[in-house]
Image: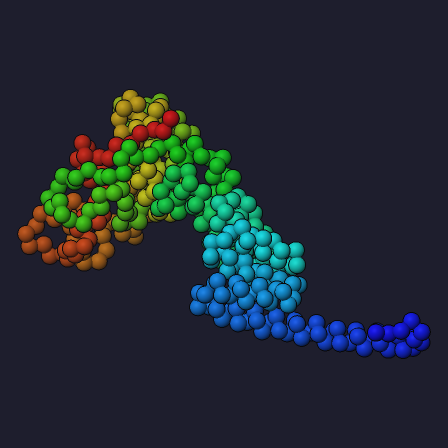
Length: 357
């Protein structure tokens, strides 16, 4: 202990010496914290998140100013499904280094665990901004958030995966909720197919999984109300992608509409959603189910466009069933009926749909 009578020179020397030892001690603690954190990372790599979390806690006690320790411990908490503590660590990491995207990413992941999707989305948008939009992982995470929001609204995952690509954020999905949920199948099970295929074949009995074997980008919709509005059809079918053409045609007492997209996936999902649907002010007499056929769009019309199924497989084996006893084309057992479309079935065996109130 330094006495009060000590000279100023001796006091200054003591303070300088103490400061040097203090700095050396601080440097040693920081070095030790890094060593402990590296051991924690090894445990994370093998999935031992609980032990890693404990080591990271030690590292934080040695040095509470390294944001990386909080980021990694947040990851451990999230992996252990302790989302509230994962969020707390992520937010502390942001305070230490708000310009590091990983801090915001971990906050977003913790918020997903807590079910706060819109708040999580804001965190991921921040990540994209910090990384100048060059983050495929984060973009994928944002897409998964929109899919999750659609799932929570009752949209099945396959349909949600497609619809989500047409919206920029969760709020847009909520704003268009009514149009997204307007049409749903009454029953998710498909009735027995009436053709020459056996009942023990590989047809799915869960939902219509529409395939588009020729890759056509258009649809022809018939059984329409003569007074149907073009805007109504645009609103219905634009849910599944960008419309390149939407035009109504009148022939005698029949009305049909041509729908052209810019890709072959949109027609598949539109077909799955609206084949056999009865929609007020759209369907003929408000009672007739819509009948939808795949059609080539304008750019696909011509001699260069393939109109036959490629490969060596039998088209009929993959659709309504091959009647030839000695067919020259290939019959692959697991592909029996895989491309059967709703319009290929008898009208009384189509799946029925209803309009949600």
